[in-house]
Image 1 (cartoon, one colour):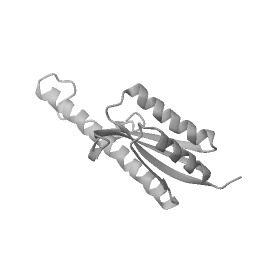
Image 2 (tube, rainbow, N blue to C red):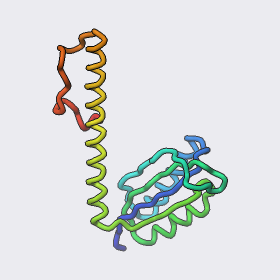
Image 3 (cartoon, rainbow, N blue to C red):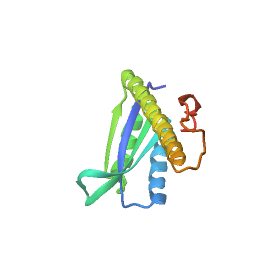
Length: 154
């Protein structure tokens, strides 16, 4: 069996495309990876973003990143799919070294912590606003404690 390497492949779909067509493209890319011996780890849908410059008369694009392990032969087949699909306007596939995988995990943890903190701050601001309006939802001066935030729910 061929050695499996971890890869990250990012591609851009035109921002003007419909949701169903976009899901079809993403499924086709995922199927190409799995049918050729790869294993999907994660699919990140970044959402629509403004492009730095026009690509094929498009000003917005929907970014998608696939994280997967696969033998090296899968990459040529995957990039062939990218070339043949007119709805994929740019792509880049990279090998993910072990230190990048660890850094990525730490970055995701920091993002989760920031989201949890912002949720907590928003809840405290809402409570303070309600108390100031005289609704008396909680006793005066009470705040939600950080321990009450369920990080898995965020």
